[in-house]
Image (cartoon, helix red, strand yellow):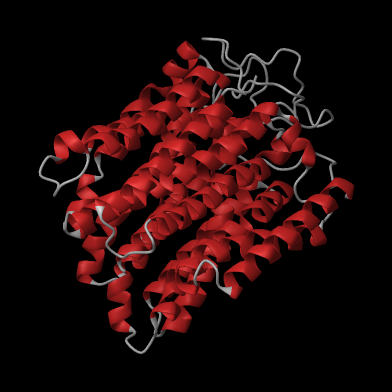
Amino acid sequence: MTIPSTKAPGSGAPAPGTPPDPRRWLILAVASAAQFLAVLDMIAVNIAFPAIGADFRSATTAELSWVLNAYTIVLAALLVPAGRLADAIGGRRSFLASMVLFGLASVACGAAPGLGALVGARVVQGAAAAVLVPTSLALALPAFPARERPTAVGAWTAVSAVAASSGPVAGGLLAASDWRWIFLINAPVVLVAWAAGLRLLPRIGPARGERRRLDPIGTLLVLLATGALTTACVEAPDWGYGAPATLGFLAGGMVAGGLAVAHMRRHPDPVVDPALFRTRAFTAATLGLLGYFLAYASMLLASTLLFTGAWGWSTVRAGLAITPWPLAVLVVSVLSGRLVRALGERRAAALGALCFAAGPVWWLLFAGGDGGHYAVAFMPGLVLTGIGAGLYQPVMFAAAGLLPARQLSLGSGVLMMSRQGGSALGVAALVVITGGADRPDVGALRGGWVFAAVAAGLAALAATALRGAGGRTGDCRGVRTDSAAGPPADTGSVLPH
């Protein structure tokens, strides 16, 4: 049984006068489960890295690193092409198929007899996650009326924050028994989510009679650009930031990116339509999320290094110490809809980014020593960053809802690409700032906090491009969202009409 479509033709929004989908929160739960698994498997495996290395003693550290990097690189490289594919063949079909693939790859990871088989299964897992992540948001957004979308996206982003922050704890606990459980535990979750998705997810596909042209050259160029740039960022700590391999991948990625942009401007139906960026709010969201996740990734890694390195805490204790961050995200996310309606999109997002920047500023002023004053010196900064995340991410990710239904997954993929790219660059930047030390001291980490505060400030600047009318979210008078009009013209409102 599937839910009949009540969407306006060619649009991601419900048709005027249509009552809200009664199962919309269940749809969001299914979509959020996919998001949780995709993010958790990226974080938890980092904690299990020593245990995996103990099982494959003959492998070098560089070879073992591909257990982590294969997933990250493939996920980042395929996000945009996967979003375009999902728009072309239908989000529901893509989501269900990739959920099955993710579950099978997880079982293959858990049963891998050797390192090569484990890395190969991680590649498949990353490819499946690249479809799941953008389609999950694209399937959930159309089920909600405009007034509820900040709350819905807030819940969706809160799940991501909880997965990222609970990853160290979950990874440590499971690895203490056997690292293979990190992957095998995915199977029952995937099975339940797939069965629920089969029953609940709406059929959202291309407009009737519309045919999308293939763009194999553009797809290849996007894959080469994102894959090369992500590989350079991920591998630079091992290869060296000035190593020929690092510089070669950076140069290759930049050349491929330039060729991709030139190609997309000429192709009649490119893999990434430049018209997406004619919507001011969508462009602001893309740039803002890049800056935000530069700060997010560097702050999360710096916090872990402070706890486990400078303060000498265990991995599990460090994971528990970070929990005020996702807890604050959860609380603010529950209120995000009301807050955005009261403040307006621009004010809510700008305030969120400034709260996020206030976290590392607090640590610059008070954190240090041996962690004896954690509750005063560090925890308030975590709460501030959680409040900021709960305000900023829902507004920015909701920008995908501005796009027509035929581009929802693609738009989500572009925003996710900003997330992955920002995260990879944020980690790389912190490694450079701390000199690549395994246990950097507090003095080295202060440079990382300065970087995070500046990046969060840039994210706040991007938020100023949004509409600032307090309390009148979703006011897009005169903006067409039908398929003939294409993406809405230059408008600052993130919440779709």
